[in-house]
Length: 124
Image (cartoon, rainbow, N blue to C red):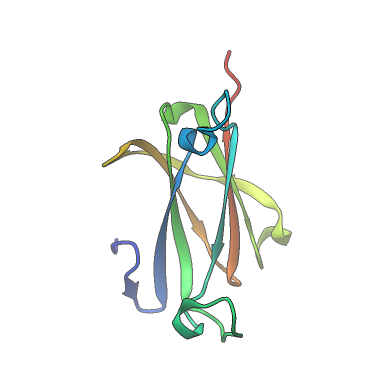
């Protein structure tokens, strides 16, 4: 497997890092849901949203979320151009990250846009 941000043939992978519990630092309780938008800007001028683009080359993105308890999180993704653009379950993998525990969801990028939604399971 290639490192995030590298190319192999027509497959480009991006890596995105989000912070789970830290996103809610200004609230009394940790975040229950975190969303990450993945936009393929590989065919845009200097990665800009300001100009039109041709079809990009990114086909997959790995989104990592820093969390305290990886087992208590789930993920799903809505992929533009696939599964009627509806949210479907995404495979979530626990990882060790240099900043602590994390979970990673690797999702397809079909038509340039994917939304990944991480949700914390309710405490029992």
